[in-house]
Length: 169
Picture 1: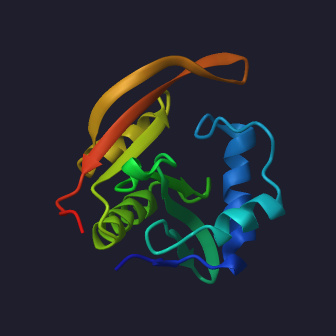
Picture 2: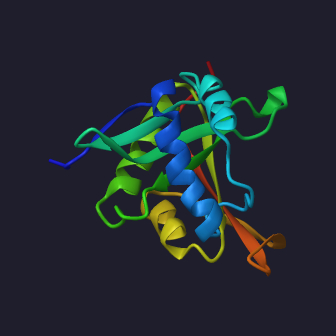
């Protein structure tokens, strides 16, 4: 049994989710965001979550140690069956299976919601994130060269995709 549990995130989890995310804003290319996210921004993001686009958390000993979410891939109606996955693990809790468990949980939730595909957009230098996506069945779609800039470096983004075995509703 894992030493953590996965559950749907609530508005009360917004600050813990924000803290995990903001670590990566200042220390990593996991996100190309440069300004720290505010409490108001994360609370607004939480209010946008739904059954189709949930946020989940991994909790251990009453602490949020990782989170994941599905978000709309694009806003146009024709993209309604595609979502983008995000997974962030607290920097002190890597290599415990959190990311994999959260991503597999998101995949099941996406199937239940009738989604057809999940997209992963990952900074190409984040090899652990890409390896995780490949390990659970995502396939390489392509790489956009030098589309991001952070820490005085141009960065590439690699896109992956997982097609789900669902039919149109």
